Length: 262
Ligand SMILES: [Fe+2]
Ligand SMILES: [Fe+2]
Image (cartoon, rainbow, N blue to C red; front, side, top):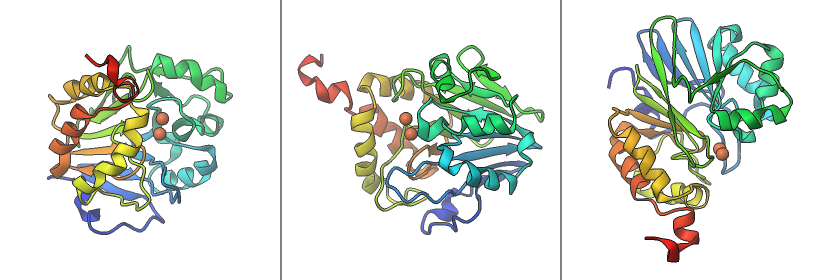
């Protein structure tokens, strides 16, 4: 698949001392920023660079701000960042908004209205907000576009995913996130990965209807990789299995109130 470097990491974890290239084609690159976090909950931060601009997805906890900034600088001048994409307001996704806005107070924040209500509680009451519900895409100066796809109740009411049209990679936020004691950057065996997906999804995701609603939106898209905010990246050979997993998942209220299922 043109430009997709994910399979190079399928059998062996990469060196985590620098950003790891996941996609590279025609001056359009996607990196996993390679922050070593030694918990089963480990959070992923990704950077999409296209031409001389970039988007930073889910920059994370304040504790990792210094390291994320260092990794970003290895790729691009932080002043060239078009904005932070915050798939919801949880601290593992968004707490470092405070540090990023200190670095650049005019940095745009791409998020939904529901997350926008809560983000100021980290300390910045005013910021340059791009409402992804009203304007569900952003276009780089070279014409490449990232689309935002709302994923209500997966797990937050105002959660969303981001789809890069050039690479066909999906930044899925907490959807397809996994809790892993044995971490791999890329899923090697999807069947074996189901258990790690279940640990997260059965408790966090609202219901099968919420899951099916997102899959219905995603089915028309060609998706070449799923880049979740926790755990392993899912590469193209496992895409059909990944969509079926979410579509058939029993979770949240399906499990808590089985007697109310119709
Ligand atoms: Fe979350
Ligand atoms: Fe998360």
